[in-house]
Each structure stands twice: as structure tokens, then as C-alpha cells.
Length: 319
Image (cartoon, rainbow, N blue to C red; front, side, top):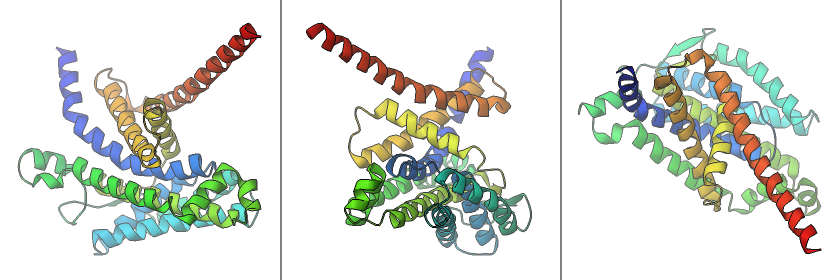
């Protein structure tokens, strides 16, 4: 009976897990730009994610429109990315250390934005929010039209972002950013300003991360100073799960971004499954997340090693 109750709870919580996965998927897409395209280990995301939520909450509390608040959140994330890029390219600080310094400074900035409070509320009843957890129940009960459903809203929003990124990275500037990540020395030899591309990539990535943070603050009903803690782990999990699961099917750049978003959804469904069915204490989720990332990072390497060993053995047999 307990299992059936847990299963029922999991099924009921599934729409919320998918909606939250879609929101975190936008953050993971931002991380994909730095981790996969630029091959930069950027830890700024733990801070810029909260910055987006804090700026959005502060702007909406001050009476600004939700779309303007989200735009300002996006720009605040870009500013954080610029700081990391400046420290890395101009001050010659290693990228991972530069991002740690920015992340550290953002903690104080985020507190200041929220009026030196650790939490700032964005209540759906008092604000015209784009997405909210309460909309899940209200749509199910018929209190709101279907297009208010968070899965539909965030899904369409993610599709627009993926479409815009697909267009941008197909332009000359976008292609030069990808070339910078593929081979920085060759790109520089071709006359590409690699430092500018690194800064621009970091700005775009952290802008998307902050935008995701603004959506999560609306969805949860508040911005919280620690809401970005562990974001790098969730983002990496989404990227790796997406690659391992859909890597052989999705070769197109746009589909690779879709895979990242799907990876985030799968991650949150698994998390919800563990919490609901196995009845694991939520305090163990950080350890579980780290283990998931470690496993999904290890499996592809083992597969590559196995394939290489098989190829070498075949060559020896044919010799």
C-alpha cells in the first residue's frame, strides 16, 4: 500500500518535475555554451543564476512588468559573464579561478539587490508572473486556460531560445565563437579575436543562466540567496545525460540544444522518482546529483576506451 501511495505521489508530482526540468534546461543550455563550445570551466553560474532571480524579484516588487524584469535579469547575467571574461582575458587569470572570484563577489551583489535579505518573494497573486507552481493546479482544475500551464509556457520559451541560438551560431560571429572553442590557436591564426569571443560567449551563457534564474524565482514564488548553489552540477548532469541518451540521434546543433533541455527533464524526473518511490531524504540529493554526474561522465570514457581497445586488438589480429 505504501508503494502505491508513493507511486501515486510520483505521478502527481511528475508535471512539476518536468516544468522545473525545463526551467533548469535553459540554465544548462547556457552552461553548454561555455563547457562544450568554448571549453571553459565557468563556475560563475552558481552566482549568476541567483542574480537573475534576485534582479527579477526586485524589479517586479518595484512594480515593473515581468518581461522587463526578465530582460534586466538577462542583462545582469551578461554583466556577470563580462566580469569573468575580463578577469580571464585582460587580467590573465585562469578561467576557472576568474569564475570563482566573480561567483564570490556576486553573493554580496545578490544580497544587496534583495535589500540585504536572504529571500525576496514574488507572489503570483500580487504579480503578473510568466510561470508559477500554483498554475499547475489551477490549470488542472480549470481555473486558468491551458496556455498558462508551466510545461507549455516554458517549453515554448525554450524552443524560442533554441531557435535564436541556432540562428546566432550560424552567423559569422557565432561560427567564430565555435571556432575559438574548437581550436583557439588556429582561430587566432585566422585573424579571429579570440579574447572578444570568449567574453561574448561568457556573457551570452551567463545571460541565459540568469534568465533561467528569473523563471525559477517566479515558479517557486521567491528568490533565495542560495538558489544557485549546485547549479553547475545540475547543468553538467543535464548536458551529460542529454549527450549519452541522445548523442547518437541528435547531430544537428539545434537538436544538441534540445538534448540538453531533455537531459534536464530526465534529471528532475529521476530526482523526483528517488524522492517519491525510494523515499530518500531530500538532504541526500546533492550527493546523489554528484554521483549521477560522475557516472554519466565515466560511462562515455569507458565506452571510448573499450572501442579503442577493440580496434587495437583487431589491428593486431590483421597484422
